[in-house]
Structure formats: structure tokens, C-alpha cells
Length: 114
Figure 1 (tube, rainbow, N blue to C red):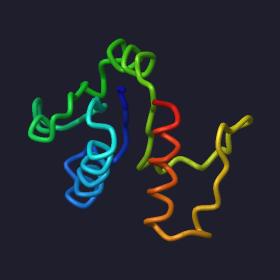
Figure 2: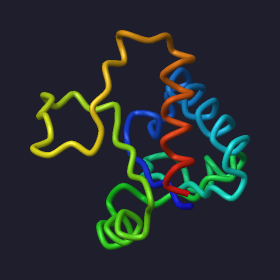
Figure 3: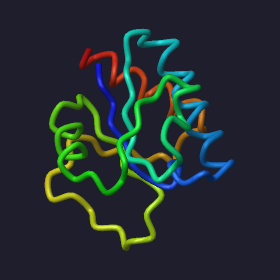
């Protein structure tokens, strides 16, 4: 399983990096074969300590290839206005559940796919 991502976690932000590392740790506990690739502005190799392949943010060809090859694409950390998807594959009221319940739901959904 390949998860590709982009967002503020790729900009040397300690708080966002901690969130990313926690998410990766939890996913690897449940899906040991999972691989990660991130669009990054970090110095080359910065995320290697977490077993994450990085693609330079400006390398459009590699970014498109990673998105096409990925099983899941995670985009976050944007300041752009939210535009709801026209046909969402999943609708979930995250505010009606605890963080732990939401995490469990997401992991359960991923396990159904893989």
C-alpha cells in the first residue's frame, strides 16, 4: 500500500511533523507493509529517518506519478478555502466522535480496502 501526501507537515514544522510521525506510526502498526511518499520542501533526505520517501515540491512529473501510483492521497495544511467534493466516497461527522474513535474508524476503513 502506498500513501502519498502533501501539506504543512512537509515544511520543517515541528508540531505538524509530530502529527505526521504519530499517524505513520499508527498506520504501520496496523498495515506493516505501508509505504509513504511526501511532497517536500525539506532538505533532501530529511524524512528518511521516518522511512518516508520525499519528492521535491517543484518536481511536477514525480508528484503526478506518485499520486497516480498511490492507494491513498492525503492533502492537508492548506490555507485555501474548503471546497466540498462533488461525489465524496465517505462522509463522516468527526465532531460527533472522540479522536480515538475517528482514528479507529479510519484504520478500519483502510483495512477494508487492503
